[in-house]
Image (tube, rainbow, N blue to C red):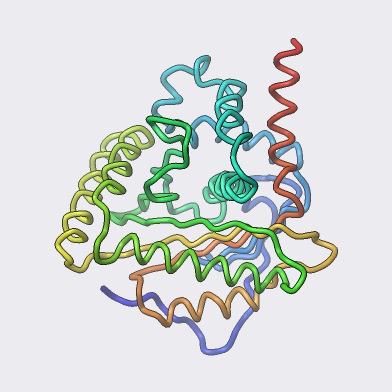
Length: 291
């Protein structure tokens, strides 16, 4: 396994990209070097809502499944199922669910070379999915990426940068455990099913073959390409403190020094309140029921 590239020795700022790089989604600021991205959600704009509407069913059920019946897998029906799963969960779980949703919405624009093969909804019950948080297939080659998302509020003794660093380190530790000795075959079984309902053939066949190869290596304790996506969603008032690209670069450099992974992509997101997205979803269902 080759270590992830460590880059330059000194922290550097991520280049600021214009809004068109996020598909024209207004209310967002992006800094990115292609592998590491920092996004601040300044407002839940109409264009953000439009993009969420386009992505939600594909994320929750799988793109190929959702395309089979646009009425059955409508935006409103998908929201109802999401809220059924969301509303009764404890606060920490709600933050995790909403944070994972936001990361999925943003990833096609922050890391366009990765094609999602993940399905959010558990297939048997309304509990939290037991497999990998996210999985991706490289659109330009035969590579798989395994994702881990961590989300949380900034407490009074922290800055947004410190919280993000803690979350990314936790994400790195957890995904390393999932890919390491004692790896659970069931995680890959779930990912193989997801690949079949998210990707078109022959990409789906390629992704599934790679997943089967990886799990065989993992179970045997053999080495394999451990490409990972680490994501953090930080909840904190923007006028108090915001994420900085210099601190994110320092955190990423520290993670790369561990040489646990072959390649690494990172997404760090900040928004003021996770409920702003959920409130929009509730409003859509309320309006639909009223009509």
